[in-house]
Image 1 (tube, rainbow, N blue to C red):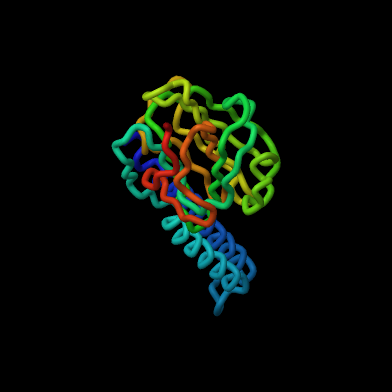
Image 2 (tube, helix red, strand yellow; image 1 turned 90 degrees about the horizontal axis):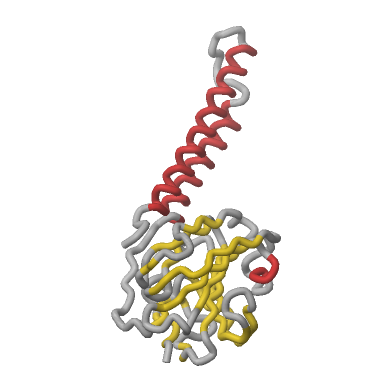
Length: 236
C-alpha cells in the first residue's frame, strides 16, 4: 500500500535528533569539567550526573518513539460501500453537525481520540479521490476536549467515493497540546484505495469523520477502533 514505512522513517529521524542532542550535551559537560580540573579527569566530573540523567531520558524517549511510530498493516474490507475507521483510538462522540467547508451542510460526525499510546498513522476511509486538502491554523488545546476540533490547528481532507462521488465524506486531522505537526502524504486529485496510509499526526490528537446523513453508522461511543480495519459506517 501507499506510504508504507513513512511513519517508521519519521520516528527514526526523531530518535536520531534526540540521540545527537543527548551526546552533544554529554560531550559539552565533559569538556566543561575537563576545563575546570585543568585538563585532567579527577574523580567524577561535577556535571556528569545531570548529563547522565538527560542521556537516560533521551534513551527512554527513543524507546517510546519506537512504540509510538509503529505502523500496523491495514486490513480493509472488500465491500466498497463500507467506510473504514481512518485512525486508531477511541470513539468519544457520535452526533449530527454542520460542516460547511466540504460537506456543505448537515452530516453525521464520528470523533476519535488518539492517545499517545495509539498508532498515529491515518488511512483512507474509502476508495476514491482526494477532492480537498485544506490546512487551518488554530490553537493547541488538549485533544481530550471534543471542542478542540473547532478551535485547534487542523487539516480537512475531503473524499469522493469511487462507487458514488456524490456521497462525499471528509475527515479532519486535529492537533493537540503535544501533537503540533500534521503531515499529509496526499495531494488534491490523488486517487487512494481504502486503507492507504495518507497522513501522520505526531503525538496525542483527534480525528473527526464527517459522513452523509444517509450513512448507516456501525460504531458507538466508547468503542476502540483500528485504522484501516474497523468498519465505521455503510454508504446506502
